[in-house]
Image 1 (cartoon, rainbow, N blue to C red):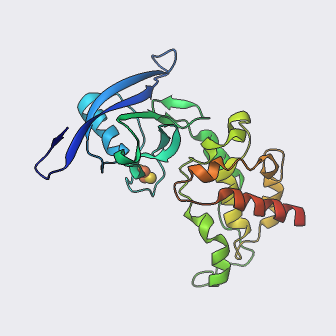
Image 2: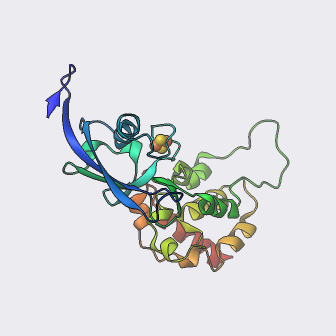
Amino acid sequence: MFSNKYDLVFMTYTIRILRYNPQSDTEPYYREYQVEAAPHERILDVLVRIQSDHDSTLALRKSCGHGVCGSDAMLINGENRLACSTLVRDIKGTLIRVEPLPGAPVKRDLVLDTDRFWDKYQAVMPYLIPSEPAPDKERLQSPAEHKKIEESTKCILCGACTHACPTTWANATYLGPAALLKAYRFIFDSRDQATGQRIERIASDDGIWRCYTAYNCVEACPKDIDITWHISQLKKAAIRM
Ligand code: FES
C-alpha cells in the first residue's frame, strides 16, 4: 500500500481476466495481472492501465467512459456490470475477476460478437412508425403520455440484461429483455401506430411468453430499469389484442 502526491491510497490488486483469441487459442484461459489501483478508480481505468502498461494484446470495448454508450458491459466478479460505472471499492477483497458477458460468442477477450443482439433489436422495429405525415415542428406528446415510456427510454443497450437471462442462455433465438424493452418503448408511445405489427412479432414463439420472470435482467440493469415489469405489460397488451 502507498499514497501518491494527492494522498490517494493505492493498493495492489490481482486482476484475473478470461482471455481468448480464437485465432491462436484452442480454449479460453485466465491470466492474472498485479495492478496498483486506488479504491475510487473505475474497473475500466484498471483495464486500460493493464492494456497500456502490462499487456497491449488485451481486447475490450469502451467509448464514453460515463455509463452512456453501453459498450463496456462485462462480467465483474460474477455480476453483469459496466466497467466504467463500477469502482474498485465496490468489489470486496483484492481479487477482481473480469470475464466477457455470458451467453454470446466471444470475438476476443472481453469483446463479444454482438450481431445476434442487434438482429433481435432490429426485429422489434426500434423506430417510431406514425400514421400522420411529419408536422412542421415536433410530434407532441403530453407529460402523462411520456411518463408511460420514460423508464424504458433510459436503456443504453449495453446488453447486461439480455446476457443475464437464463432463457437467452438456453434459447439463442429468444428476443431477450433488451429487445422486448425496446418494443415496449414504441408500443406504449402515444405517437406510434405500429402496435399491431410489433405485438405480432413479440408474441411469437421467441418472444414475451418465453420470459419466466427470473428477474436476472432487473438485477443486471445498470440503469435500474424494471424490465420484468415492462415485459409483463407487453404480455397484458398482447392478451388484450
Ligand atoms: Fe460507455 Fe461504459 S464506456 S457505458
